Length: 114
Image: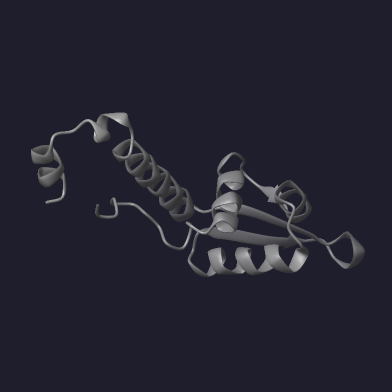
């Protein structure tokens, strides 16, 4: 089985997929909300956010100063497109492994592999 179009190796690791999925449901999210929602340490979350930001999938804003400084994160249009494509690819993989796929004839399996 070939990898479906839209499958994104950058988003696929579970922590990054969780971050992007959480951000897909909102416009902006505060760093502590993401951290606490996903039960991550500050450093683990920072690393994943940095990786996604470098790919152009996230925008990170730092607001305020001193003890009142807040970090806000959102998906960019590129990130949302990548996430949507990845979800569609995952669905195609899952649907390809479902009961209908198991019932396919050997001829259909051969044609699907082309």
